[in-house]
Image 1 (cartoon, rainbow, N blue to C red):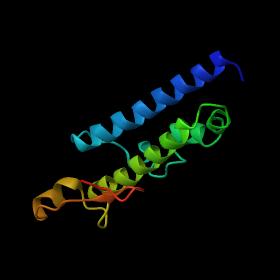
Image 2: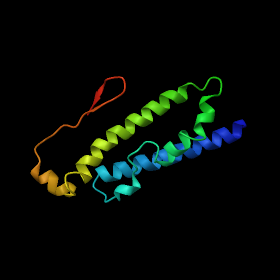
Image 3: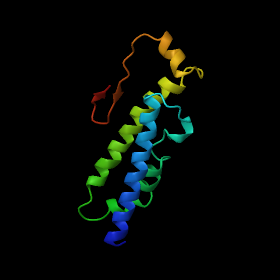
Image 4: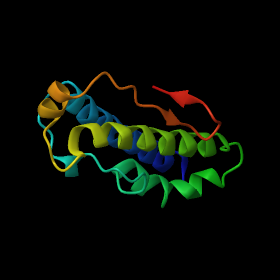
Length: 119
């Protein structure tokens, strides 16, 4: 694998990740988004599919241990999104707005691998 190929793979993975994040933001901002458009599992999104296949070759290269940290952060991101997904699509299929009108203020926390709580 040459340098140019690696850089192209990283760019493509970054674009895929940014698209996933934008769809999640759109959902939070009230734009209807099909729940299938934002995969829950960290290995099902385009970035995860790349990271846990071809991306593993990059991790094995000298000086690329930072990729392990990226993998952990990617997993944490999906754990946090799962909490958001439950608010929007959980509870027997009730819509977000019907839940919003009936629910009291509720903070949703997600614990990261290093034990931090994220709101």
